[in-house]
Amino acid sequence: MSANYSAIFPRALIAATAAATLAGCGINSVPTAEENAKAKWADVQAAFQERANLIPNLAAVAKGAAEQEKGILIGVMDARSKATSITLTADDLTDPAKVKAFQDAQNQFGTSLGGFGRLLANAEAYPELKSITNYQMLQSQLEGQENRIRIALRDYNEAVRQYNTTIRTFPDAIGAKVIYGAKPMVPYEAVTPGAEVAPSLEGKL
Image (cartoon, rainbow, N blue to C red; front, side):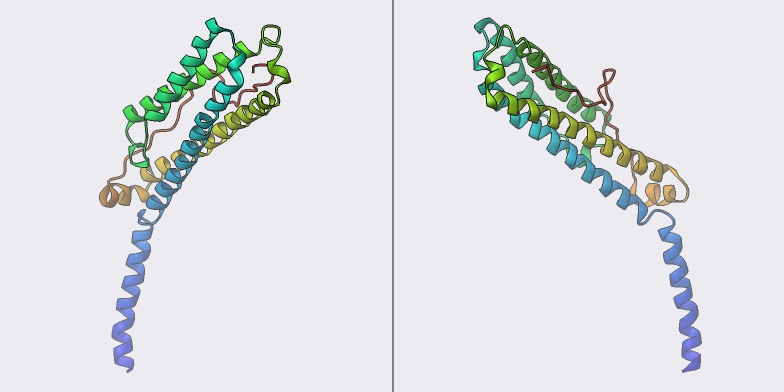
Protein backbone atom coordinates (compact mmCIF):
# COMPACT_ATOMS: atom_id res chain seq x y z
CA MET A 1 0.00 0.00 0.00
CA SER A 2 2.84 2.35 0.78
CA ALA A 3 4.30 1.72 -2.66
CA ASN A 4 1.01 2.53 -4.30
CA TYR A 5 0.70 5.64 -2.18
CA SER A 6 4.19 6.72 -3.21
CA ALA A 7 3.23 6.31 -6.86
CA ILE A 8 -0.05 8.19 -6.51
CA PHE A 9 1.34 11.09 -4.48
CA PRO A 10 3.69 12.46 -7.20
CA ARG A 11 0.87 12.31 -9.74
CA ALA A 12 -1.46 14.16 -7.39
CA LEU A 13 1.22 16.76 -6.76
CA ILE A 14 1.79 17.23 -10.48
CA ALA A 15 -1.95 17.58 -11.10
CA ALA A 16 -2.30 20.14 -8.33
CA THR A 17 0.68 22.08 -9.61
CA ALA A 18 -0.69 22.04 -13.15
CA ALA A 19 -4.09 23.24 -11.97
CA ALA A 20 -2.52 26.07 -10.02
CA THR A 21 -0.40 27.04 -13.02
CA LEU A 22 -3.40 27.08 -15.35
CA ALA A 23 -5.42 29.08 -12.86
CA GLY A 24 -2.62 31.60 -12.79
CA CYS A 25 -2.77 31.88 -16.57
CA GLY A 26 -6.27 33.28 -16.70
CA ILE A 27 -8.26 30.06 -16.88
CA ASN A 28 -10.65 31.37 -14.25
CA SER A 29 -9.95 35.10 -14.06
CA VAL A 30 -10.52 35.90 -17.74
CA PRO A 31 -14.04 34.42 -18.08
CA THR A 32 -14.96 35.76 -14.64
CA ALA A 33 -14.01 39.29 -15.64
CA GLU A 34 -15.76 38.89 -18.99
CA GLU A 35 -19.02 37.69 -17.46
CA ASN A 36 -18.93 40.54 -14.96
CA ALA A 37 -18.60 43.10 -17.75
CA LYS A 38 -21.43 41.47 -19.70
CA ALA A 39 -23.65 41.55 -16.62
CA LYS A 40 -22.95 45.25 -16.17
CA TRP A 41 -23.82 45.83 -19.82
CA ALA A 42 -27.18 44.16 -19.24
CA ASP A 43 -27.79 46.77 -16.53
CA VAL A 44 -26.95 49.54 -19.02
CA GLN A 45 -29.38 48.14 -21.57
CA ALA A 46 -32.12 47.91 -18.96
CA ALA A 47 -31.54 51.52 -17.88
CA PHE A 48 -31.75 52.81 -21.46
CA GLN A 49 -34.88 50.76 -22.12
CA GLU A 50 -36.57 52.13 -19.01
CA ARG A 51 -35.86 55.65 -20.25
CA ALA A 52 -37.37 54.81 -23.63
CA ASN A 53 -40.45 53.40 -21.90
CA LEU A 54 -41.12 56.78 -20.30
CA ILE A 55 -41.54 58.59 -23.62
CA PRO A 56 -45.18 57.61 -24.28
CA ASN A 57 -45.95 59.15 -20.89
CA LEU A 58 -44.07 62.29 -21.90
CA ALA A 59 -46.11 62.50 -25.08
CA ALA A 60 -49.36 62.22 -23.13
CA VAL A 61 -48.35 64.90 -20.64
CA ALA A 62 -47.20 67.23 -23.42
CA LYS A 63 -50.54 67.42 -25.19
CA GLY A 64 -50.76 71.04 -24.10
CA ALA A 65 -47.86 72.01 -26.36
CA ALA A 66 -48.60 74.43 -29.17
CA GLU A 67 -49.19 72.92 -32.59
CA GLN A 68 -46.06 74.40 -34.16
CA GLU A 69 -43.91 72.96 -31.38
CA LYS A 70 -45.15 69.43 -31.67
CA GLY A 71 -42.42 68.85 -34.24
CA ILE A 72 -40.00 68.65 -31.33
CA LEU A 73 -42.09 65.84 -29.83
CA ILE A 74 -42.02 64.07 -33.20
CA GLY A 75 -38.24 64.39 -33.14
CA VAL A 76 -38.15 62.78 -29.71
CA MET A 77 -40.33 59.90 -30.88
CA ASP A 78 -38.19 59.39 -33.98
CA ALA A 79 -35.00 59.40 -31.94
CA ARG A 80 -36.56 56.92 -29.51
CA SER A 81 -37.50 54.64 -32.41
CA LYS A 82 -33.95 54.69 -33.75
CA ALA A 83 -32.38 54.20 -30.33
CA THR A 84 -34.53 51.17 -29.56
CA SER A 85 -33.99 49.67 -33.02
CA ILE A 86 -30.21 49.45 -32.60
CA THR A 87 -29.29 46.54 -30.38
CA LEU A 88 -25.89 45.81 -28.91
CA THR A 89 -25.48 42.32 -27.52
CA ALA A 90 -22.81 41.27 -25.05
CA ASP A 91 -20.95 39.58 -27.92
CA ASP A 92 -20.77 42.93 -29.75
CA LEU A 93 -18.92 44.72 -26.97
CA THR A 94 -15.55 44.10 -28.64
CA ASP A 95 -16.68 45.76 -31.88
CA PRO A 96 -15.94 49.53 -31.77
CA ALA A 97 -18.16 50.26 -34.79
CA LYS A 98 -21.23 48.60 -33.28
CA VAL A 99 -20.64 50.24 -29.91
CA LYS A 100 -20.34 53.65 -31.58
CA ALA A 101 -23.56 53.14 -33.54
CA PHE A 102 -25.40 52.33 -30.32
CA GLN A 103 -23.83 55.29 -28.52
CA ASP A 104 -24.71 57.69 -31.33
CA ALA A 105 -28.35 56.59 -31.33
CA GLN A 106 -28.66 56.91 -27.55
CA ASN A 107 -26.91 60.28 -27.55
CA GLN A 108 -29.25 61.60 -30.22
CA PHE A 109 -32.21 60.37 -28.20
CA GLY A 110 -30.90 62.01 -25.05
CA THR A 111 -30.28 65.29 -26.87
CA SER A 112 -33.77 65.39 -28.36
CA LEU A 113 -35.30 64.55 -25.00
CA GLY A 114 -33.36 67.36 -23.36
CA GLY A 115 -34.52 69.79 -26.03
CA PHE A 116 -38.13 68.90 -25.48
CA GLY A 117 -37.70 69.22 -21.73
CA ARG A 118 -36.35 72.74 -22.15
CA LEU A 119 -39.32 73.60 -24.32
CA LEU A 120 -41.76 72.57 -21.63
CA ALA A 121 -39.76 74.44 -18.99
CA ASN A 122 -41.35 77.64 -20.25
CA ALA A 123 -43.98 77.90 -17.53
CA GLU A 124 -45.37 81.13 -18.97
CA ALA A 125 -46.19 79.46 -22.27
CA TYR A 126 -47.49 76.27 -20.65
CA PRO A 127 -48.63 77.23 -17.12
CA GLU A 128 -51.09 74.35 -17.02
CA LEU A 129 -48.29 71.77 -17.16
CA LYS A 130 -46.89 72.71 -13.78
CA SER A 131 -50.21 71.91 -12.14
CA ILE A 132 -50.54 68.45 -13.65
CA THR A 133 -49.62 65.73 -11.18
CA ASN A 134 -48.54 63.39 -13.95
CA TYR A 135 -46.14 66.03 -15.23
CA GLN A 136 -44.51 66.39 -11.84
CA MET A 137 -44.26 62.62 -11.49
CA LEU A 138 -42.72 62.28 -14.96
CA GLN A 139 -40.21 65.01 -14.16
CA SER A 140 -39.03 63.02 -11.15
CA GLN A 141 -38.97 59.75 -13.10
CA LEU A 142 -36.87 61.19 -15.90
CA GLU A 143 -34.35 62.70 -13.52
CA GLY A 144 -34.09 59.44 -11.60
CA GLN A 145 -33.69 57.47 -14.81
CA GLU A 146 -30.88 59.67 -16.08
CA ASN A 147 -29.10 59.06 -12.80
CA ARG A 148 -29.56 55.28 -13.11
CA ILE A 149 -28.13 55.42 -16.62
CA ARG A 150 -25.09 57.32 -15.37
CA ILE A 151 -24.49 54.80 -12.58
CA ALA A 152 -24.96 51.82 -14.91
CA LEU A 153 -22.49 53.27 -17.41
CA ARG A 154 -19.97 53.98 -14.67
CA ASP A 155 -20.20 50.41 -13.38
CA TYR A 156 -19.95 48.99 -16.91
CA ASN A 157 -16.87 51.05 -17.73
CA GLU A 158 -15.19 49.92 -14.53
CA ALA A 159 -15.95 46.26 -15.34
CA VAL A 160 -14.55 46.78 -18.85
CA ARG A 161 -11.43 48.36 -17.40
CA GLN A 162 -10.91 45.38 -15.13
CA TYR A 163 -11.48 42.90 -17.96
CA ASN A 164 -9.18 44.72 -20.38
CA THR A 165 -6.50 44.92 -17.71
CA THR A 166 -6.86 41.21 -16.96
CA ILE A 167 -6.39 40.07 -20.56
CA ARG A 168 -3.34 42.29 -20.99
CA THR A 169 -1.57 41.48 -17.72
CA PHE A 170 0.83 38.59 -17.20
CA PRO A 171 0.17 35.76 -16.49
CA ASP A 172 -3.57 36.07 -17.26
CA ALA A 173 -2.70 37.33 -20.73
CA ILE A 174 -1.41 33.85 -21.63
CA GLY A 175 -4.77 32.16 -21.13
CA ALA A 176 -6.60 35.15 -22.60
CA LYS A 177 -4.69 34.87 -25.86
CA VAL A 178 -3.96 31.15 -26.20
CA ILE A 179 -7.15 29.64 -24.74
CA TYR A 180 -9.87 32.26 -25.12
CA GLY A 181 -8.65 34.47 -27.95
CA ALA A 182 -9.93 37.36 -25.83
CA LYS A 183 -10.39 40.80 -27.37
CA PRO A 184 -10.61 44.10 -25.49
CA MET A 185 -14.10 45.38 -24.76
CA VAL A 186 -15.10 48.91 -25.72
CA PRO A 187 -15.93 51.33 -22.91
CA TYR A 188 -18.93 53.62 -23.21
CA GLU A 189 -17.50 57.07 -23.81
CA ALA A 190 -19.17 60.38 -23.09
CA VAL A 191 -19.19 62.47 -26.26
CA THR A 192 -20.11 65.80 -24.72
CA PRO A 193 -18.58 67.62 -21.73
CA GLY A 194 -20.32 66.64 -18.52
CA ALA A 195 -22.24 63.79 -20.14
CA GLU A 196 -20.98 61.44 -17.47
CA VAL A 197 -22.79 63.49 -14.82
CA ALA A 198 -26.48 62.88 -14.27
CA PRO A 199 -28.33 66.01 -15.39
CA SER A 200 -30.83 67.68 -13.12
CA LEU A 201 -34.18 68.03 -14.87
CA GLU A 202 -35.47 70.43 -12.22
CA GLY A 203 -36.54 73.53 -14.03
CA LYS A 204 -35.85 71.90 -17.42
CA LEU A 205 -39.13 70.06 -17.79
